[in-house]
Image (cartoon, rainbow, N blue to C red; front, side):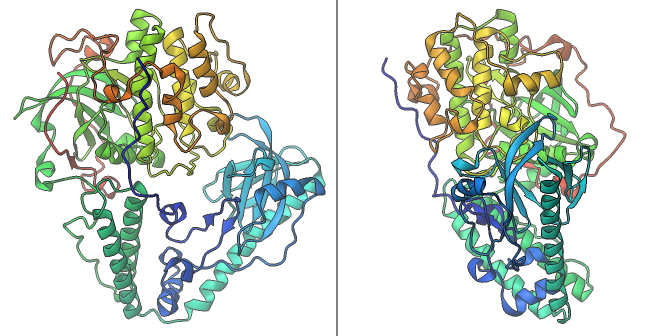
Length: 624
């Protein structure tokens, strides 16, 4: 069969400016050269004149985009050997000051190994690069505002302690180079604090006028109306536009809170209607507000983790069967990161609709728990089937990878990086098709060129760039796809060690051993996916997953029929009824399916989980 071109993801409007979407309040935007482009109110449409003065007088930097004053005429400190690097990285955007650049050794935040990186200090932003001669985006960006710098360890080592207490350990070749870097970083941090203080002192004397704030609110509400109209014009609005709407709401909320402080009156009650249309996709809030665990019968435990469990349940009125993921709030609120992951999972599941991604039907909460009511995929985990049957054939692997690759390409087109691809998160439905589940580690609202830095994932599947403490993008999912391909045909992952540290060192440096039974097609795909430098990895280009699905490994796949679920799966799991749990681990299914009392109550109306409630567009289940 001739290969059909894999279909493109759902088309959407051209992406908005990443800078405008990601940092619309007051953050400087990154230029292509890695410099920080300092923008003023005139360039961004921020409030000017009395309105801007009023905001600055309140110390509300987030209410308007203020131009950063120059940090002075500090000269660039660099050797002649760095001239080619400087040329590759560019001279910097207008309004930035190059303070210093050069090579330093950096210690990984998790994997404590020293690696050489090229650092560039502009204003209060410190960027570093793996190979500056190639130009492009920095590996990571460090915000030096209110940081501290001190010597530590060897005589040439020093540490930058950031606002969030995160530590960046660096080492110079000589004590002289170390001291010059410490002085430059300290000067940059101190000057930005002094300049911000000067801005505050210049405007603080101005009287706080409620009328000024009211005018600002009017301007921002007009802007919100324009964004809302633009949002409603899209059938499938881009994630960046949704993010702008959310930020605009927050901007108005801050202004209204400021107005309350000025007038010394209690805040007005919140609007009943969500001003962002359908962002919560709740067609009837009164229905989901009443929905609770009392509306379900719980039958069997399907899985259990640190924060909760997944239980097979049926809805009492319709008798429809679901998998209900139940999370204890008390466990989630212990960490800002777990709160973020839970809220993101809720937000992501609401917008996903793909044949190879699990579907969310309802979401609701009680005083102590969060509930995700999802379709019950009763064919079990790919992991379980691999352990029972042994390594898969190449044809079987190809079918599963085609469905997984199609789903990941769809997620990326939605601005979502999955970050937790592994066999345990791949379910089979009763027909034998893949369903990706568990979006707790996903990152949303990312454009193709955007990067993130959170260290997360399952150790065996983590990409090298994550371990190297570099910012990373969607290419981490393609590394994980390579690991899954290897594991399906071999029975285990390519990197195995007795300790986590040993495992991470293997992922970073150990040559990959390919079994002799791997075909040339499999080897060709793996050699393209399991590339340690993400810039050289298949899927790195603007067409993302389309690059991978066009690989000759998938030449026999008709992707139109695949997405229509018209191709016959290589294996159909034995399922006797809609309540069949035989494809799940017996250590879970034998547990009592009860909600144990929770001693700590967080609160139903806690702002942390505001907007969690959700009702899908239909109360239908696609699987038996």
